[in-house]
Image (cartoon, rainbow, N blue to C red; front, side, top):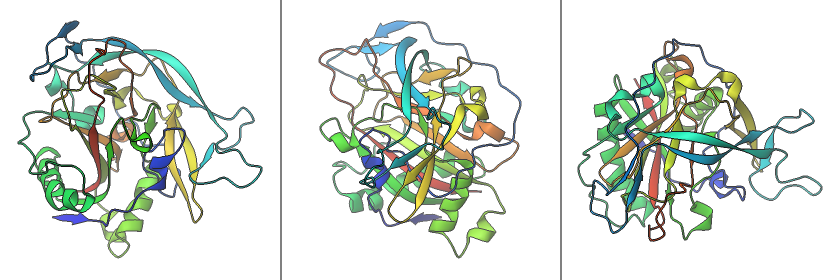
Length: 326
């Protein structure tokens, strides 16, 4: 069963700082713990031609890149960001970024090692071509692409029985307000996920919250293979609750929350080299299943690959955000 919410522009996606992840009221970050999993074997380093035909080489294998992590206010106050114009005398935000060089491992060739329950992200290959071709009209995307995403989630997410769509974002290099986000973040905090259920499905919320619910984003390129600003994901099994910082996003009529992410050398980072248009990444922002614990959220960010060829096209992508029940 699919339920699609009306697509309203979300102001958080227009932040001047580049952090455009979704935010809803509530701020709890902690989740139950679970047993760690062993890291998969990384594929051998290489820069090889794309699996799809391309006029440029596709960087592959592990790479070191500089990522932007959260740095809390020095006075210990709660981090905040004004989504629209800030009040007179207030800064637009009161926190900063801190850069760290991170080794990012390529999952290409080891896709089956990763799953939503173990790592909070999952690669999916060989997805049939979409009937959506233009990616220009929101209503057409909702009518044509959303049902395809629903089928994908119901097929690949164990136990899923219902999908509710609440947003999507298309990113293109020529659109500054929708350029790739170069800051490590998680789209939702744990309590914010519950608040989103209550916001979108108020009449059913009490019943739905008694069973498992997840927030899962479905990410794909629109002009693959990707060689410019690929997406990096931290293995959820290597991210401590203490690494996450609740960030207030202050709207004129409400306050929402996302999670900033502190750098921790124990985090293990991955990307999927040369993603093509028939590949999808499932990114889990929250999972109410206590047995999964903190595996239920995946920090992620676009990153600059120093090996990107000069003639590589700017990355275009779509990310669809869903509530998955069951």
